[in-house]
Amino acid sequence: MVRQVWKQFCHLSFLVVSCGITACNPEPVVPTEGVNAQLSYFPEPVYQYQNNPLTRVGFELGRKLFYDPILSEDGSISCGSCHKQFAAFADLEHSVSHGLNNQLGTRNTPALANLRWNPNFFWDGGVNHLELVPLAPITNPVEMGSNVNSIIRKLNRDPGYVTEFRKVFHQDSVNSQQLFRALAQFTGELISASAPYDQYVNGKTDALTAEQKQGLLVFEAKCSACHKPGLFTDHSFRNNGLNSDFKQDPGRRIITDQPTDEGKFKVPSLRNVTVSSPYMHDGRFRTLVQVLEHYAKGVKTSATLDPLLAGANPGIALSDEEKKQLLAFLEALTDKKFITDPRFADPF
Amino acid sequence: MQNLLSKYTASVALAFISLCTPSCKEDPDTTPALPGQVTLEFDNVVGDAALSLDDQEYTNANGDKFKVSMFKYYISNLIFKKADGTEYKQPESYYLIDESTPNSKLVTIKDIPAGEYTGLTFTIGVDSVRNVSGAQTGALDTANGMFWTWKSGYVFVKLEGTSPQSQNGGLVFHIGGFQKPNNTIRTVSPSLNGNKLLVEGGKNPEVHMKVNVLKMFQGVNTIKFAELATTMGGENSVKVADNYVNMFTVDHIHP
Image (cartoon, rainbow over all chains, first blue to last red):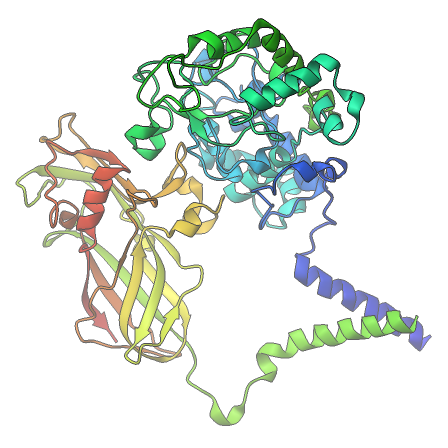
């Protein structure tokens, strides 16, 4: 009997000690754990959930917030309004961002995937941390037009949200840090690594067709310097010859103030590129055929044109056959599991 | 079973040790003076006059007229120094001083080890680490409106107002930026004028600091509102930051 009680006491003490260490967070559950295991050909992620331990409830709360128009000023627009899952979390309908009262921004909605690996965000790299990404669209007057204070007030007035936030962060009221960390738990887990290309890399040699394998060779020779596999971006900023002057949008120069950065934009990942049109920072091309045409024949020269595209004949020499093979290969980057995964879908 | 039990016993022991750690160490024979606190008062002024956010008109060294509608700034990473070179660095040391919020102008720093301090150092703004650490709370909460949304980083000093000399009539000085070449983080050590801060439990020395708005516009760079009335980071913000390193002076100290 004494032994029994002692055992129970021991067990309780053990719980108290472990709670002290983890602040009584629920068991961390990685929603996409199965996927993570296969990512040997990815580099280490930049965002490691420092101070924001990933949990099932945190991920679910982030998902709900992502799809809730409560984050916009007039309750009409959610993150998911422009980042639609079937379009790999991009927006097929608009060349540039489309916000409150049908206002338009200046840049194309980027597809979302594998954000934990990004050292910075947006076409110009202005935001340096995954947790701070939502702050820009939330406060942009032509996107969600809200402000952090009013959102925090709204969330604290909603008993459902107060309860859910408490489950994740164990605090009495909701603050902006919790909001951004919850969103980061969802957006950080938007991992796309189940495309035919990934199966091929993981040893399934028949995951690509013969034409796609040819396309991969062309890709490696002519595209991979910037669109580095497996993330299909090298995270650099480059002027890819869309314009010869940059009055409309100076790109990276806005952030760095350096004339050498004029007209440079982030090299986007090509994952799910076939389902996330339109293309380029201003969404000017509707099809991948147009994109390849641009690189083959349309590159415009300027002082900051990327050296890889410069020369007597600016651009990338591509035969018709190579273009066909490249288009076939790009299909192999479409992750059907990712764009239909119910864990990422609108919960409302 | 034996193993399991000894594991639990170890856990219990650990729990007791961690419970005891703060109190068990006390040695009644050599009880040192208890830690104390210091209050810093930030008194925002324009030259000799108190800053007022109403319709008061001021004149800067350049002869430009101006009115101020908003004045707020971060001070952070407070360090108290003793004559022998030892120092106390306050952990989690971030404060937003806002002229429109009187309470914010009084900052009390608790748990400073007892002793005689002869120097005070702090950063005007926010260190680079916190500028790249994601969502923060407290003084650093993005809800405080001192964070750039389109280009991550804190606004260190914000002054808004009007001036007839400004081309569009407005003054918007949002000074910030933590990366080269436009780093505006400045660390200052305003002189205590030979005075000492005697810190121990039961006392509360007060340091009255004057923060002179005029210094933003004069010093190594003369800021003429006709030429520069709006800056939100970048080269021009650096010019202002190079001036405002001299904005903080210790006026007097209450022991």
